[in-house]
Length: 306
Image (cartoon, rainbow, N blue to C red):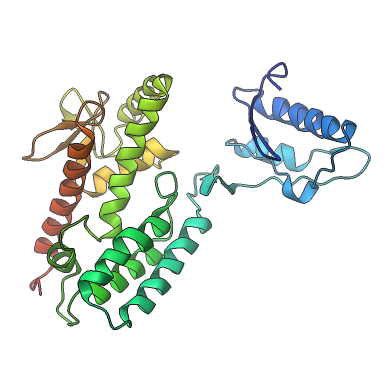
């Protein structure tokens, strides 16, 4: 595979390979044909329906759909998004993530069932924090689920742990009813997961740090909201194309921004760095950032908190 010019990844009986550059589609086709030929030579049976190919280029995807894969008339689907290792990867800029949306919907059903159990709200909060939220947000670092499904999950959690009232503020419900532990707002925890994933990735793969900074520079050059350069704030809405872009977008939603040195900034608050900040402190600072933004939005948009 590496002789062809692609980077392979083998997990059990699955082969995943990536190609980059202007000729990536040609390399991907060559690698696909070579891998299928190899498996046939060793007597393995390839499942064509489980094979797929894609590209970040719309023109390349169109060309791949017209490609003939040989005499046996095998049709290898060309997709715009797919699931990999529990997360969902989207290549056409639509940020489609049905895998994550389904997890959010399943979590909402679980919370609704939990709300009817004859146990204390403190116990319910513990179950949501340790069981339901981790399952709901798995893979949210690299994909965006349905906003409707996310709001439904937030509402169901607020119903389970807080008072029921037409004037109830979800923001203040999460603030006052989360108890002694992580905040139960899934949108708060989604930001925490994005920041901590960036930290872990750079810690485990040092070469990724340079790539992340290059990506941040490119977004800053386009003046994407959530980035800053030379002390200047940017406010242009740019479609995120990957996990780094999604993190920038999430920070902007929470009234914060990140610079090329991985410093996260929020107005009237102390800056903190994703890499050098102690791990436990990083978790607390990121969660506090999101909670301040949530409370600020509630105070601006509502007449009543409870």
